[in-house]
Image 1 (cartoon, rainbow, N blue to C red):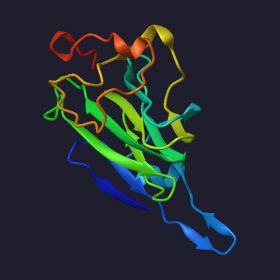
Image 2: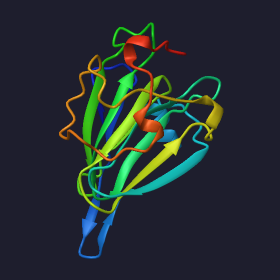
Image 3: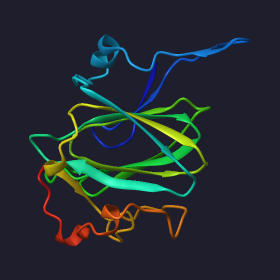
Length: 180
């Protein structure tokens, strides 16, 4: 497995070694020992999966301490633009983000540690997205940032995505007080 540094500390892109033959393909999507050698010492406790049509934008979400979540994400079917925003207030990359394309054919995975807001835009219909999380879902700890906040400067390739009701009303970044 190849580890690609993103320029933001602890935010990693993982490119697994994929074995293909006429029957299909095989790759190792998680191996605790290998991940520990990459500095990912998380105890993943919950797996989630979502199905979305093209043009759905989910995020930018996070959970606050003590229920903060790290995530290992990948696409099973379809494709997304995945974004992680550093919301660790003492980080030199505070408010900066990384965007990566995750597709069923590139097999790329994205490790997002606690202290980041996370979201993604589906680029194809019937996209299946997988999240491996370091804490269980805790509704009282849920938070988010506006997907199109000008201070975050995320260049989403869509002007009017389909959003959930809760994703329409997050506090602007200028009024945000990071819990991290």
